[in-house]
Amino acid sequence: MATKAELSTQIEHLEHEVRRLKRSVSHMSLDCSPEPARGYYERAVYPSEHARRAIERAEAEWERDVTEPQYEGDYERINAYIKGRDGLNWSWEKDYTKDGQFSWCGAFVAFCYGSVLLADIRKKIMPSCYRLMNNWGRTSRLREGEVPMPGDIVVVFTDCSRSPSQGNHITLCVGAPDESGNFPTIEGNAHGMSPHGPTEGVIKRERSLDSVAHIYRLLPEDFEER
Image 1 (cartoon, rainbow, N blue to C red):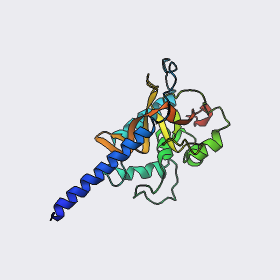
Image 2: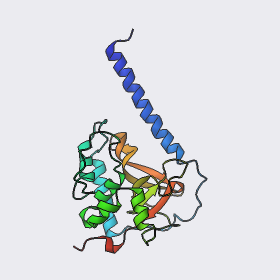
Image 3: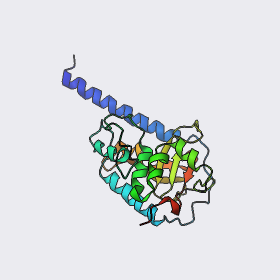
Image 4: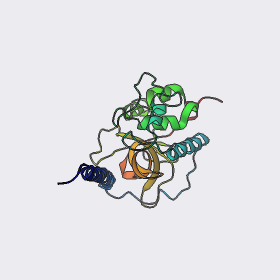
């Protein structure tokens, strides 16, 4: 009969395998669609100054090793994205203490742009895929038929059902697509790579162009004059 310590080790190993399999399924699901067309990734792509700073801030948050509470990273940092003045500024929300308590992918991107992005945009538009589509779906911020540029807010589908139509996860594009039609992102509330390996939280990964629901590119009037 196994000892309590041995059972605990076995449970920890099984939990790790479950998380690994979930990540594998997530990655495999992005490959269910046909391969993207070729040729559009060859042009040079450069971010705006605001986008460049947002990417730098995203990199800094990634380096902090922000994870969901069940991991060993800085999960309390998630409160800055949801409740802080540079994020959504939803100060009435309870402190984030449990995975799944709040869908904070949009809050993370809002925080990356920070206080230079208009407060109403961060507070009222960035929290969800639906709000982005409802507010920006008929504006020039929506870049349908294009490929993402660094700094773009890219909403993706996380499975092959490609529903709902507004997408279901908000990411920050940090680089141009490669020859395989994949582009790098830094994301919150997602599975991917931390500075110390696979985790769930603020992560880096690649997304397929086939997974893109919508691309939003911020306009000059979306920013505070400084």
